[in-house]
Image (cartoon, rainbow, N blue to C red; front, side, top):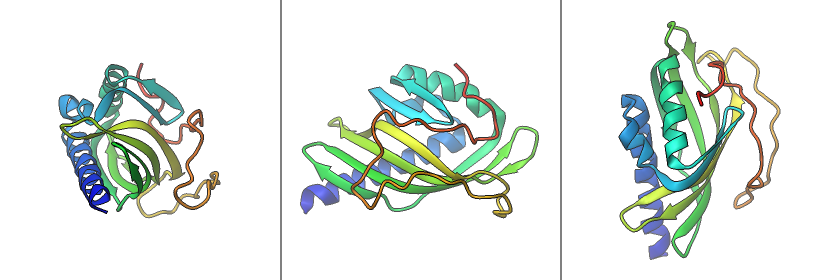
Amino acid sequence: MTDFVVAECGIRQLHARYVDAVWRKDMDAFGDCFAEDAEWRVAGQIMRGRAQIVKAMGGAFQNYRRILMTFRTPILEVGDGVASGRTYVSENSQFADGRPFGPIGIYFERFVDEGDRWRFNWRLFQTNYAGPPDLSASFFDVPDYGPPPAMPPLDEMTIDRSGAGPVAD
């Protein structure tokens, strides 16, 4: 149980650091959340490697005034320096033109303990809702992978429902 508690604490800290980096648009801190060889599948894009992830999101952040993400408690499976999990996420954001935006979804994630801290190794964001924060838009039909620890396949693709357009290359 001790390994699980240590991993869960480290992963919660990773999520907290990620939220802080996104809010502040701090690309160095943002990049430090990802393993060097990480893969991230979000908004219809596949980004491979920390450098590509940072470059793409640096461009995407320009579409927003602010992004505040709220991560729920991750549901984790932990063993031998790796973990997988799903985390329910909501976002309160404002586009650069002032429009409010409040997506809700699930991050399916694989984490790796790199010694100094846990980092994201593989992530897929499944958008369940994308629209006004008052939830007046429709929810999307999305695949149900079953109860944890079930995960989507590593080659699963997402659909761009961000409302901001494609992630910059």
